[in-house]
Length: 222
Image (tube, rainbow, N blue to C red; front, side):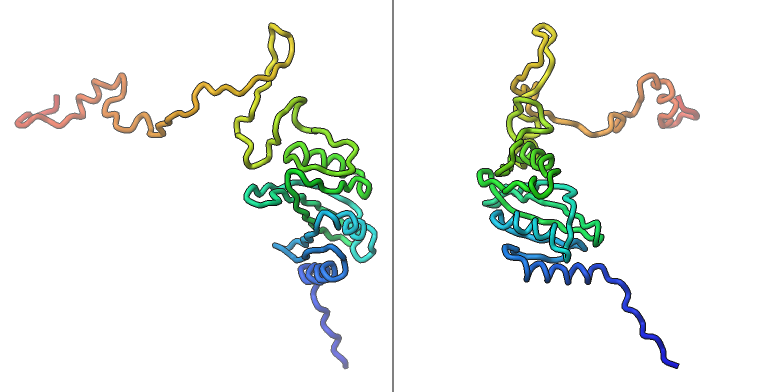
């Protein structure tokens, strides 16, 4: 009687590794593709971004039909300090990929809104919080911060206090913007417990007297 061959158990990481090799060798403009911490990551350049994204969506080997998210990362020490990260999902093949492209404060990234219309919301958020520009984006406005907001709050060099503060002026009956004014630029904090070093607590003076050591030669405490 023949013994049936054992099936090789499903190995998702191995499949992602095979997919990474396919991406790195078959897609023009791909700078690299690898499995990083169990996730498929692809890096490309700005000029090749839209072509790579279109292939990832339409090629049946990949079938990344949905763009789930777009976010920014700031590395101020780099010449191209920003990374724009696209998280794509293939519902058909049940797999995900992270696409990364780098840029600086002046070079725009091609907008992906014609490939995934939902990209407009994410690109506006990335522009608002990091200042990343997206070319061919017809609605590149701030989306989270208020009108007249200065700067981009998720940049690493953005001050924690911000540049302006917003408040409602009762006398003027309108919202006003004013420069941030700190009452104290620096304060010293003493984190020592207020009870440390206290021999007698307030109101406990009499009880403290009974705990004192007896006088020499005395038969009882005072």
